[in-house]
Amino acid sequence: MMERSRLVFSGSGGQGVITAAIILAEAAVIYENKNAIQSQSYGAAARGGSTRSDVIIDDTEIFFPKVVQPNILISLTQESYHKFAAIIRPGGLLLVDSKYVKVETKVDARHIALPMYDTVMKKIGKPIVFNICVLGALIGVSNLVKPESILRVLETTIPEDFMDMNKKALDLGFEMGEKERR
Amino acid sequence: MNNQNNITFVQGNEACVEGAIYAGLNFFAGYPITPSTEIAEHLASRLPQKGGKFIQMEDEIASMAAIIGASLTGNKVMTATSGPGFSLKQEALGYACMAEIPCVIANVQRGGPSTGNPTHVSQGDVNQARWGTHGDHAIIALTASNHQDVFHMTVQAFNLAETYRTPVILLLDEVIGHMREKLVIPEPGELPVVERLRTSVKKGVDYHPYLPREDGRLPMSDFGGEHRYNVTGLFHDMWGFPSNDPKVVSELLRHLVDKIETNVNEIAMYKEYWLDDADYVLISYGSSARSAIHMARNRRARGVKIGVLELQTLWPFPAEMVREKCAGAKAVIVVEMNMGQVVTQVKNAVDNPHTVFLANRVDGELISPSDIKTLLRMIQGKGV
Image (tube, rainbow over all chains, first blue to last red):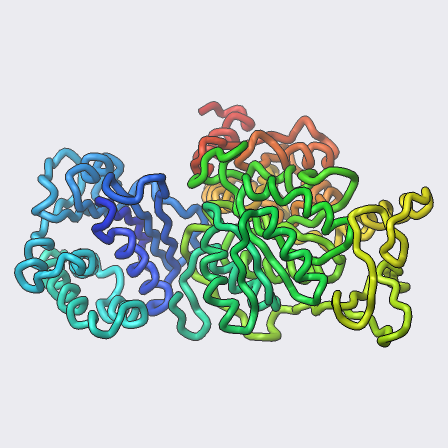
């Protein structure tokens, strides 16, 4: 039986953190036969500021749908890192983008800073797939779901012409993440 | 929406849409409002696919009026809204009660009063669902705590609307409406669907729209079709014509209330968790029931005899059932996100109202398992 995974995705509106959270949870439910819940904080502001989406993945039924203490925190901006780093579960995992977040090792968590944004810009040149690269890195480190499951969700949600770019972004992230897996 | 073998990963509002389609919805009129908007948004694409009609009206009042008209002409109808829109619909909702017109009104609750707290959760409209429109009347209101149940309760809402010729309120909340989880869409025939009961009176023969059959049900005739008849919000006779004859008035009002209140046990839907030997009974509904079940499951693992009664029918309030389930309890804790609406009903229902407590949260955040645990410890005399 897997341990319950509680994730908080955080960043700035427009980075695709909420989309990434939905894709991960959907992949877990539809292609890996797990239970998952995704929720997000809604506010009046749509752009800028910090956005947050919670995902819980487990084999057993999930009742309370919110994450109080994430064992995995993904932060893609300095602001969201500062806002949420303190709630991470002791011994948890913190994944940040090294361009956007300067990590201060104040919390008891494994810190992984990867150049996800820079790699996407260098190898693909389109920031739109940054979130998919983050997702690749996340599952590379954590083994939460298989990359094929993510690809199958993408195949049903994005236009065919964009698939190659997304697959490449997922692979780039996965390679970076896998090197950090323990 | 993605799906494989009918397994989908959707928002609660989409589960409501799929349940409505399954139940045979073919006319929706609405006006978008957070946090219900996704219901209208998805129906705008889903309904035309199956030959139904979607119309965005100029406001909530017109939306309610439109579904009443469409129902009379033979359609299964729904509108969706949230607090401020639900307030606007109350007058026409009373008309649907009086004229006995089947319709479903989804209210995805947010914080109120007034425009309140649009993007945050609340369960403050429970009493509005019961008494929002004026005058003596009975009403059916259903709720759900997960997407499978949202689907099921939506189908039930349509079934009860047709069976009892009444508006049925689907009282969801922001957390359930917006969060995403698994929904398995049942095969056709897996859940019962009640179709419109139409009159067998032939064209040219007198049809009495408000003359009940022996079983108390009122067969309908599609308005504008084979029979001419009158529909009014005034008290009316069996022809549908206005009347203030005391006998007609009294009989109709008693009929409107009795057709629902005498069937309270038929209409009552609920779930129970670990109630058999429970010293402590949590009563909850909607998203707050998820926190109650989560907390009870954790306490059970530590040996506390605690269980949960999850209400799915809020109105008519299943008082007899609640009294029975609470009979052996040392304490009953009602978990809801308002200043105490269902707790009042529970106190009226049980033998020992002084053992009933309210665990609530009204700040727009989902009540948490630890919020409930704090109250339990105080009741147990353990302190916090």
